[in-house]
Image 1 (cartoon, rainbow, N blue to C red):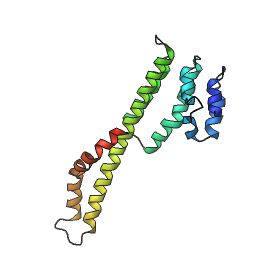
Image 2: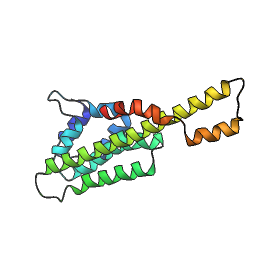
Image 3: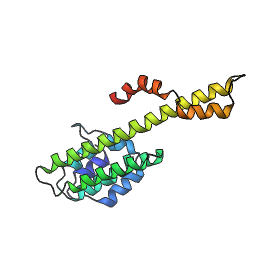
Length: 174
């Protein structure tokens, strides 16, 4: 059990203590499973206090949102993830079992994270394909077209359709 597990299972949830722990420990520890195969987030999802949602948001901000922002993710991805975080917060007022409602909102959040990762991965594969094609032309000693003409044609059709067709299946298996 990590200090995060202890905090998540305590009666009085403390945001300031979580902030100190998040600053002190690496993010990977947040996903460490205790002896009963539960992470700190699992305990927070089951917690009945309304403060649990604030702590969930802090954890997801530090562990997921901040790294995604560092990649330079699109505004669409960031706003979608913000929307999913708000849905977790709004699950407080919903009817039904609180843990189930929070879990559903959390699953939606992770689904959106996966989508953003696939978009980013696809963009990187397309960029690498275009870059390889451009590099191969520059390395040729004789070229029938000028570099500017070839660069323009590469912008229109980089050959990424072929690469993506072969790679795309692996991106969804994740």
